[in-house]
Amino acid sequence: MADTTLMDKLVSLCKRRGFVFQSSEIYGGLGSVWDYGPLGVALKKNVKDRWWNAMVQGRDDIEGLDAAILMHPKVWEASGHVAGFTDPLVDCRQCKNRFRADDPRIKGTPGQPDAQCPVCGTRGSLTEARLFNLMFKTFMGPVEESAAVVYLRPETAQGIYVNYLNVLQSSRQRVPFGIAQIGKAFRNEITPGNFIFRTREFEQMEMQFFVQPGTDPEWFERWRGWRMEWHRSLGLDPAKLQWHQHTGSELAHYARAAFDIQYQFPFGWQEIEGIHNRGDFDLGRHQEYSGKKLEYFDQAQNQRYLPFIVETSAGADRVTLTLLVDAYREEQVEGETRVVLGLLPSLAPIKAGVFPLVKKDGMPEVATTLYHDLRKQFACFYDESGAIGRRYRRMDEAGTPFGITVDGETLSAGTVTVRHRDTMQQERVGMDRVGEYVKERL
Ligand code: GAP
Image (cartoon, rainbow, N blue to C red; front, side, top):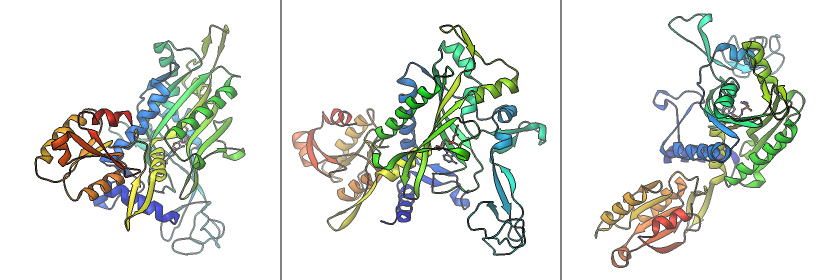
């Protein structure tokens, strides 16, 4: 299967089955902004819950936080985003299109008479490169003036740094400890794309771990190991996961060391999570810009210091896309193409489809009662329309691991057919046991 074909097929499946829709579609869509439908929101929630369980619930040394999207504008001066979160851009005076200055389609040097616009082909119409800040700006209060400018946060991390002392004191944690947060971030990306891979509004799952200076390389290595393990635990093909180390100019302004976890997408190896050793850059800058002491007194060491920070930063949308890409497969079954999302049962948006074999002989009534009982235990879907084979296929595309069918034998012997998504094998299970049966396999 050609790589672009796989992405096209996935985008179309996501729309057909209600995973992801284009934002404001009836108005022609909004560039690189997407909405999650019923199955998509459930899948992304399962990703976020799994992250939260691993990072917060399952550990004694990490606390949760939900900081506001809008923050004091000085935060973004301190963080370096006002000065440095920029891309060099050029405009075409003729066709009014805008490009990154390093767009490989541009022939010649922007600003010079020989430079040619890649869209309209005009020579000499491209401006010199100008820095363009990727943060979205808005105004706080009724007056639209520069003093009222606030930004939509481009990362969730800063909400953690400015709250670090509040969390430390209220939770009675001690260094080393971490703060984790899941939330929206916004970037006015110039070259977004690849479906929900790079969007202008997205969700991050970030954790900042505060450590004693000098112990940061050790913690950095530990977090690298744990984070790669977490991605593997999602059932992703391990051969499609790799490390990419940032070197030289690739390193962000705050980072002493950085590694990306990359996945092999149909459009190439791309980052899904970054692990960064941020040293004391962030707390140092916030201490300087706010004038508030952010040092920690380490009683055990009888020492005062600014903790160093090891950050793990993953995109909830990217991880969701990774799961969809990794799970998608097509098989030939009896001359027809079967599309399956082989998601881990624990991540699947719907755990079981419940079906009456036919719409008569009391089967819909029994199946509906069973459905109402099972939905108290896990996410289920009831479907009585169309041939049973078609209903199974719809559930295969949704990644539903179990199909439970009420048939003639249910009425006579109290058993149902359980059909397995991956093998398509069927077995009979007692109707009173089927809830436990599914739960054991989630
Ligand atoms: N606080 C550090 C930070 O934000 P980053 O490498 O810029 O680091 C971290 O972003 C993660 O956020 C990325 O690995 C990716 O998963 C996600 N992410 C970043 N920009 C994104 C975008 N435009 N669309 C979707 N996800 C994005």
